[in-house]
Length: 208
Image (cartoon, one colour):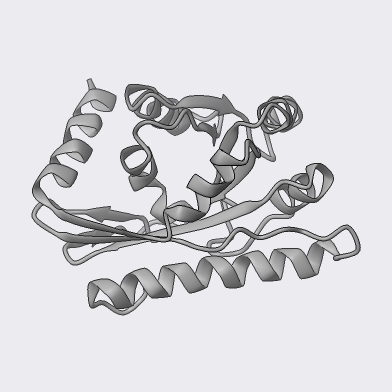
């Protein structure tokens, strides 16, 4: 019942809130070009993604943990596919699945600081995959005027109903062949921090 309750709650949030989206043309343009690409967002902002791209068959990287099972079921209710794995469990097989999706022109979603952190720091896997496949990364963030910020390792953000919600898509990042992994991780972190700050400013809050 928990995944279905979460699904109903997320739909209720969107139904009762004023949602504004900025930069959605970036992923739409990539889709028109038939290019596979990666959605990237901080672990504490992941809850809104299944709601905002309802008609897109996104493949979400979700850990093989028990908590990950609940998240996968919620994603499935929103029409999203789950690729199960992480850096500590099932990571190699998950990487192969994501590469197949991207190679066929599909899109995947990854939290670069998940599943265990450190929070707001980019683990190298996402940029290494992007560079190997020459796949763009689209950074995303959201913020809400009314929300609960949990005292978890990532400071998880849960919007409340009847909020103002702002979602920001950043410009796609291309990881150059000559760019070091450290440089690429820093550039992606800066892009994610930028869209996070922009969403907070647009909704009238300080970034959290």
